[in-house]
Length: 618
Image 1 (cartoon, rainbow, N blue to C red):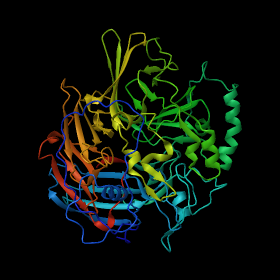
Image 2 (cartoon, one colour):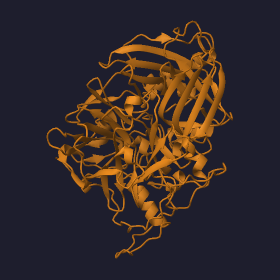
Image 3 (spheres, helix red, strand yellow):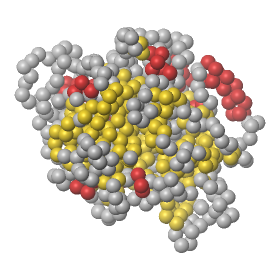
Image 4 (spheres, rainbow, N blue to C red):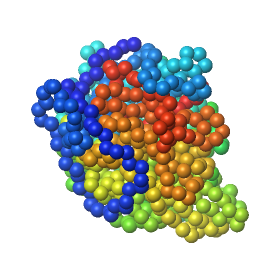
């Protein structure tokens, strides 16, 4: 194992905070208001030891430190398997053998004064391998994904870094600002997938990188967006090649492809798995559509050998920015996150005074949320086709972040009900360049951005969207409600993956109980389990504890019942400078014995907050 000391770790560690009493009741409804930041001060001078024994729960210095810990750069790699210690509980004998992969940013600060937004941090792949058939333990490896940007910005001889790519969300304080066209920085840091014997790390804007599963060595970019003919559904509305936007697109392409080195299409980092058909589903968008009031979506479906089964393109006449999407047995579902060009933001971005993403801003001009129901298999509905170009209008304004699951129920008279379970936030809060509180000038993250007052409806929260169509596919009703009346700030909804695209009873998500005054909404510290079939609005929770945060929960199935398996979640114990992999029993969420095992990562291998993971069974 090659390991170097962790960098940029603060010397002051605030003492434990006395936890507030746990909160189990559903919070009261909070009226929608403009976001107003909670004041969290940044300590300017080191605090001398000895450390006082108790810090009040609203201590802003401790909150500021805790938040920074989640995004500390880790320059070390575990190039050979490290056997991890189980410090609480035990790995159950029936835990399935396989590997939990987790990707996210690993490096956010270079050696020349620049810091980058977490979304632009170099991809750092972590692998936790369970081999219950032989060793009965967990082995850990971690490596940087050797993307083209990584190779250019890292000197392996000196282990020094110098950021040269701006990335869409960052500004380089120590690098070139004006005229820096290196915007599309593919860092492969957003999601990870094991499919058809290929391990892929994905990013929101380019081809994924293929990784060798046993060693975590980078093989190179894997071309997923070519290789098969597409069925085009552009005809009539929004179609054709002679309209003014097609002319504009043809003018933009040489600039985007040539000057800014953008790939013609950007693959969304969120994919779907149709467990019934055993298919991988992906979607990509045209690069020029980021600047035009139209959106081309290419949906691809692959079999278990990574052969393309079908590929279709659909054009929507609106300016959209899609991060996640949904599917059912017969439809692709796209929530129209509407955007527009920001002229002043574009000028600031060109002169290097703000991130390039500042050229875009959300477009809250509609009070409703358009939802496009796109047919997966056009022409196979016995002659009846819904005009997919006409969206269903959800009665409230939602910016969709992540989808947990979606499914459809067809009734005897061919009426169709569609349910979508997701995390969404408000247009009034969402800001591309301020996510996670990024501030390139201060080199620190501002936690108040993610903890605004009145955040119940503004910040990410769980919603259930219900759509009812009649036998002619006309929309009879569309309703949006908080998921089982759970209104706490929440994200990363997850289900048992074998129920993906099917009716599910349970939903899991990362959330917070709001017990810490200065960090009431984010980072998350709790896993919530919701029973979607009961008529009672009861949520079951497991909380990590005082000054411990969590990432995305992942379900590991082991039987036929929907909650038969285990939950994996990474715990960031900021008060101890430690990371843990936690195993939970989904059936015991809400009880005292939900925790099955807590597995410790060595302190010199602590890592920043991960984004998305994947369980690959042996």
